[in-house]
Length: 252
Image 1 (cartoon, rainbow, N blue to C red):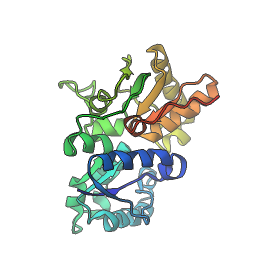
Image 2: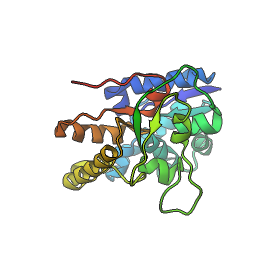
Image 3: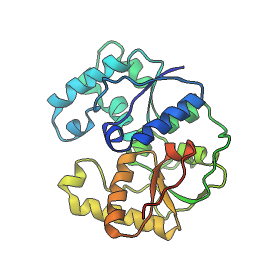
Image 4: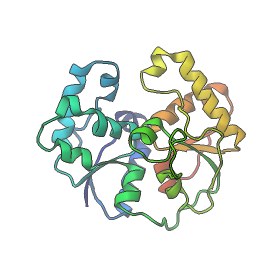
């Protein structure tokens, strides 16, 4: 399968190893992966802030760059949700848009539903891990079950992490609560955002987590900032890094 690799702008600039880990996972699944170098922000921050005129050309560029691939894969639920759930005001009726929505996947969704990944040879992670579920991933992309819905429990992330040798997933008291980041919400409502983030960190600590993982580096970036300010180490790693066999690194 010829896959277009869609990397969020903050991952490209601040966490490039997440992109490299995503590439390695896709290639292990036999995908022919290409990274369109002209790609930019998907436009989510602009759209969420009401700057639609600024978001529109970014959506149009995304369609132009990624329309020709068999699948588009991104290690971020929020960015994928922008494309699949919020591009209609900019691209509705455009040739290829419906097809683009149907073939754009968050990484864990692609690995489970398309690549049918059922084993990870030689990958181990001997740590207690707390899984943070991002709001976009659960509520818009349906990457896992939500506590507010009556449905059988499922989680693409947990399914994939269970393939990692030696990993122990801890049980949180509130496994699907928001971390408080919310993009520009963290700026306009700083106090509320920080309080929500500290609550999530406390939940992971009381469960005995040695590392926090998630499918969205934006959530982890927010939590990591609060952890660093608190001075008590609790590393964060994107799920792609764990699945790709990266070792845990604890900064002194």
